[in-house]
Every structure is written in C-alpha cells, then in structure tokens.
Length: 149
Image: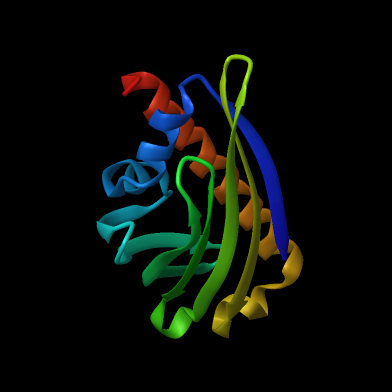
C-alpha cells in the first residue's frame, strides 16, 4: 500500500529538519510509541503499542535513515515485529521545501504487513495506515509549532 501527503509547518526548514531527526520529538509524534532511542547516524529503535482491528500488539522495530540530503530529504527504512500479530515494514521518502508560512513537508510511504495483520484485509489495514499517518503528522506538527525551536 502507498500513502502520500503534504503539510505546511509554521517553522523554518532548519527547525523542522532538526525535529525530524530528534528521537524525543519522533516518539511524541508516533501514535502508541512507548520508547525510542538512537541517532540519525546509527538508526533508531522503538517500541510501539497498537490496536489494529481486533489485533493488539507491541511492536519492536528499527528505523534507518538513508539517502540523506541535509536540510532537504531522506528515506526512512524500517521494520517492526509484533510477535504473533505479525510484522510491518516499509519505507518513506520525506522532502522539505520552503513555502509561504513555513516549511512544506511532503512524503510518499510504502508499507507491508504480514502474519495475523495481513489476514485483516487491505481495506482495514489501509484505513488504519492512513489514520496513523495523519495522526503522526498532526502530532509532529503540533510538537514543532508549540516549541518553535
């Protein structure tokens, strides 16, 4: 499945870039994130609890940043395992550009699920993926705009 979207964040590009690489900001923005550690250079590890349809799971995963063009773009590649619930893996290309009112963040993401999650059906998974994506960017935008740094 593929998701794409754009957001205008009321902050300069340097601030948005810094926060996109900050594990505390990312943890606060990821729905269900319980912990996140690591660095942009070495990758991030996270624990996330989610309920997807009737399936509740704790996912432990790793995300790496690739094709990094500082202050402009990167590609996130990650995979999480949720025990008997299955796995999720995917990647997202994130681009920043200056725009009136701040910084435009655009993304294209691709995701795959397996195990019990895959048995839930594409319509349910696609709906949940869209909701989680929207919630992440809503929360990320709020985190960046509330502190302004």
